[in-house]
Image: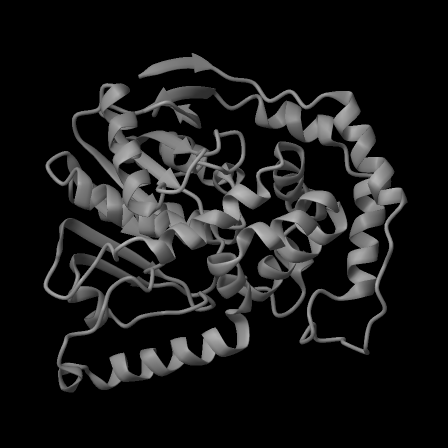
Length: 381
């Protein structure tokens, strides 16, 4: 594994091109849609576009991100971008944290100091972690797979090789959204070296028993909840899991299309009461969106949905994930399986019902998430 330092450096021409495209936006009409039930609200997105064009300063965001220690590792011929922050404590536990879609490594900016230097933020230095925060293949500043076959299972193996290459013989893993699937895959691929896994999302990979009569009432309610969610909110996943390339042409060519597609998810999936800016600033939203725009990686990010659809399931009835499992269950998460469902798959040692927060937990409630991660791994050090 070849590792070298990395700094983000978007050229001036790319920024000028973005501004030109924003200036030439052709806007659609809109039915009266105050609650966003038809999609991203037109006046709100127009306001975001004006801010992106006239007030958002990518260079300021880039400079801040470049204060993080970033690296590029070549693993099995694929470049993987990652942040590597050494913990400040007597014996920091290595922890690999994985983002999902439509997020990026910047989701974890607020939890990095809380986990790497807990004593400086009112915690215990004994809870410190060495943090490894990679960008998924085809996301952010990581390389794009050139052919099909890089799904959660393969990424789990890449992460195990990354941690081994960094010299970590024992480590934990954490994630939400696709990061939860990859965290599970890491545990399956490298159980002998994984001290435990913590997730703030439980992917719908775990399958019910073959005999449906064994399901609890809570599990039956969960299956109905998932079916309703797929009907109402799951259209994005269906198209991304079937025809990602077709969608990718539009999202790669128009920054407003990209912003509308991504910002909708931050509004609908977060604990924001319908007002996305009650939780995320415009700068936070646009820094994440700009990473997708400047890298041109939106289409390769969508392909992960198709990869999952083509691959055998990670979890099948009877297969268990061996390392200890902890879960932070946020009230506005998009789907929330009951503990009994998780216990059919995982060795559940820790389960916390969170008071607030949604799908983007590390950005929405960094202190709550960091506290729960520390509490879970404290027992496993």
